[in-house]
Every structure is written in C-alpha cells, then in structure tokens.
Length: 428
Image 1 (cartoon, one colour):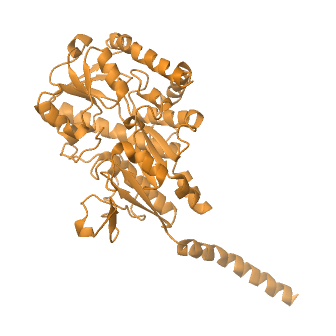
Image 2 (cartoon, helix red, strand yellow; image 1 turned 180 degrees about the vertical axis):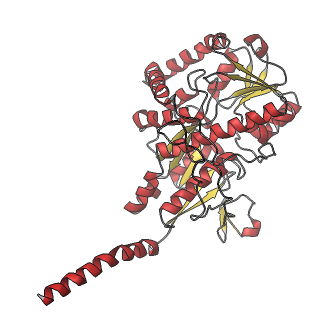
Image 3 (tube, helix red, strand yellow; image 1 turned 135 degrees about the vertical axis):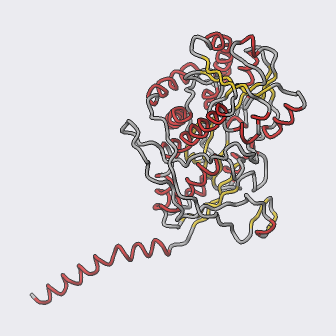
C-alpha cells in the first residue's frame, strides 16, 4: 500500500510539472523569422494600424517563436507590381499588395472594383471579399497561401470645383487607382489618368490632371487639401474600390511547426480582414471630419442623385462580364454572390477608435539585406525593416460596447496629426 501511494504521488508531481516543462520547451524552441514586404510607407495608416499590430499579435501568440520583420516602402527592392511574384518565389515570406496592380492576372477578384457594386464601407466589403475568396478564389491565388483578403476605403472624387452631376465631371482629367476605375470615369465623360500616386500633386500643379478618384486616406499624405477643396461621395455605395491580399509564401508556411501554423491560421481569414477593413473606415472618417472642419465642401449624392451615374457606368460592368466569358467565367453569377455577401454584413457596427498606449520603439536587425546589398543600421532608411515587438500592446479594451453581439474590431486611432505630410504609398 505504501509503494502504491509513493507511485501515485510521483505521478501527480510529474503531471504538475509537465505544463511548465512544455512551456519552457516551447519558449526554448528555435525562433522563425519572417519578412513582410509592402509598398506603403512606415508612417502610413496601413503600416501603423494594420500590418504592424497584426505582426505584434502573431509574435505575442507564438510566445516569441515567430519574429516578423516589416519592410515598408519596397525596402527589399522591386516594384509594387512584383510583390506577388516575390511571395511566390520566396523573396519575401509575406507580402501585402493590390491585385489591381497587375491587371488581368487575377480576373475574378476584379469584380470588387466594378462601379456601384460594393458598399461604401471598407469593413463590410472586406468581410464580404474574405467569404467570396474562400468560395471562389482558391484557384486564382493557388501560387500563394493567402492570409486574408480585404478592401480599401472607396474612392472619393476630389476636385477644384463642385461636382454634383455628370455634367460637372465631363471633360475632367482624374487620377484613378485601377483600370476599372479608369473605365468608369471614361463612361462618365471624364478621362482617367494613371500617374504614380506620389506624382499626383505634381500632376495637379502642372495641370496634367484636374483632380482624382482616390480614397480619403491619400488626402493628408499627398497634401491634396492644399489644392482640392471639393469632395464628392456616394451614399451607401462606391464608384471605385481596390482589393488587397496579405499573402504568404507556401514553402515558408509549410516549414512552420504545426503549433506555429496554428498561430498564423488563428490570425488569418475574417480576423485579419476585419482588422484591415476597420482600419480603413476609421482613417477615412477621421480625414473626412478634418476636411469638414477646415471648411472643404463635401457633397454626398443620394441614390436618386447618382442614379444617372449608375446608368452611365453599366456598360463597364457589361464589358467586364464579356471579358469574364473569355476566361470561361460567369461574371453575372460572381456579382450576384457579392450582393448576397454584402447583405449579410450590411449591419456590421461602425468600428470605433480605441485608445491604446504608445507602442515601444520598433527594433531593427543588426544588419539588413536590401536589394542584395548588406547595410548596417546607420545606412538603412529610417523606415526599413521595422520589427514590432511581440510584447507590445495590441489594443486596449474598448471603452464602450457596440450595439451588437459582434465586438468592434481592435484598431488604434488615427493620430490627431493625420493631416501631416507622409511618405506615400502607391506607385501604380
């Protein structure tokens, strides 16, 4: 009996010690470093309020076993249109890029760029495109392991004079973010111009363009408020949008131990898409409020007012459906699927900014390889290879509960200095 008792006590002691031993083994396991490459600047909302917090969350949930080095502003070299190739070929482990930067490569996802099809809310569109991708885009993105799909804030018509009707927009030369936006603008009697986004102020000053069809977040970065004081929006819908994909190299994912794959998976899909969409909506609302406060004119056209715009752009949708037939795809069916998903998420609560402590300064590797060249930290650009720390706070608890069972996404607020100049963003 005494021997049995000793064995029992020894067994209990071993069981109590096992979790601690497992935690120690987990912590002592080799660290995996992943490179995340994108073309936004290190001070952009996309970097500061989506990509960096997402990377911090992955690091924290892996107990530091995953380290994610962020390379903004194309710090690993190449052009924005090459980012998907970099993810496929392993130049970067993870990329964040817009399929619209490579027209024709991802035909089915273009349905989210058609005029007056989507919601005016990035959160709704992002949740819809994530569901749509799971059902329809697996083959289109088979070269990568997609982490999440999302939609940027919708395009606003920014001009030097009031635009409230098709007659007001006719003859204008407008910067556009993608080919379908250009076709929509042309159908309205204007001309779409695809100069690289950072060159928009120069194009305006040189009278190459008269305005732009771009999201609110580009206004402070390009200082468009100095030149364009009139803004035209559309109630409940969008004249143009752009999709984004956070995509991972397949081999980089497969090399991860099972438990680290689970960490990535837990921060993929709707969790990441919701975070991205909420970030765009909060930033758009902040920039729009700033524009109103400084006296800019913001016209929001009602469904009745933009009905002629919708009719004028219908040929763009019909032409796209014809192009889909050449790919042996049913464009009408894809549009119908989107509308079902938009209705599913239409009542998502508006995301609210949440106060969070200042993040600790990001650390940098001892040396960086940029474009094949090894650089010491003092040689690197200020925003190169920014690594959010795993122990940095992700988000503070919400200060108030949204009137829904769905909690508001955890997104940091746009700084009060959102109108300051930023290094920009999308060279198309």
